[in-house]
Length: 71
Image (cartoon, rainbow, N blue to C red; front, side):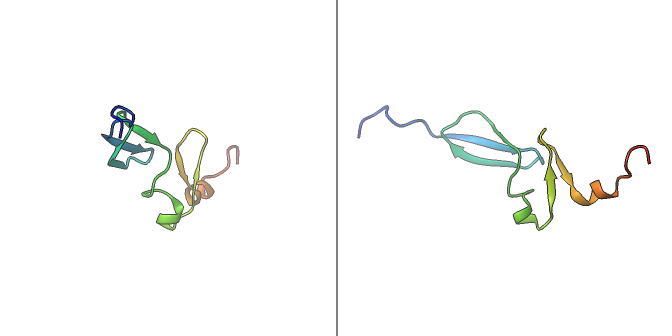
């Protein structure tokens, strides 16, 4: 095998919007930021959540309980 062909393999962290931090190894040195992970994904939690375009997570039930503006 040729040397210098393969990228480096570094310790890195994956940080989710929900605050979950996963330590892993990857070819990326920098911290990776994600919008959703297994800690907050509806498939794994069993709870339906809505994710807005800014990356925040909203609970569907909390949104339904909020009174409409001007009502």
